[in-house]
Length: 404
Image (cartoon, rainbow, N blue to C red; front, side):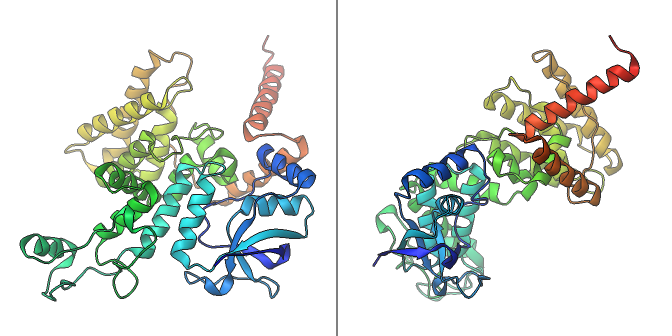
């Protein structure tokens, strides 16, 4: 049952399963929403649930907070910006799993979620229903089996049946095990695909698998797929250090991006073939993307170039000593960039390999300076500030060196 009511703003907090990583950035789109709410009011209710229904984690809250926002976090922040003291809300009594699905559905119907946000939300849902341990016996006959592969093999050779969820099951979770989870990851994957895509064919299953692989990337690589305004200063700084446009994003955001697959493949390959003491896999991916991606490239061209570089690097590393990995990486990347320069003449093609500590004290200090400069100059974007500072420094050098 859904109850509709007006709730005080101070009684609300964000739900840990809501899908937006950064609900409010204060950008132009957010400001327009706040102005609209200030002028016309809030037309659509925010979806909330009582704090007592949250199971996944403890929520730190003041004594006045009673409800968690499942969907509507941007409208919540906009209403605060507009000076509202109460917000129209729909109170849902749902568990963590259904709250996570509601948040994903509501947010994808409004402002599009980034590919990274969709991946993280599906990963959260998958973790809520996947088995915590490998099965040790068949749930049908009780025969001992060795893990999920053993259970699937047992079912294929006997009359035991492992029911797979279908889209027709809807919200019904009657096929879950006694602990509220499926017996196998295969069942969990079918469940997520059925709810997310409305089908469980191979294309839907592969799509969910790709999202889960994206969600398992290191956070810095996941930031490549974020909306630019949702990146932290540290993430933007790291991207700029590697020559990656921090005001653009990789991927289409709709979950079918080939760029995400290319980045996952790069990271997996680098993790398996590069000596991590010589070349950090995360740094290697960022260096490759920053060197190979050009402004004029389409997403398909970027993906193809990254795949070609991965194949050439893998071949060049065969039987190479770990001590030579960094040199081979840099040489292969430089040759790949040189080939691309013939097509994209006006783009810098090589950069020295560098290992950037984005959480180090020097970078933190630069991040604070960057934030102050943005505020002092009233810059509208990160790129606008960088262009202005670059032009000023260039003019200063021209004066110092007497350039014409």
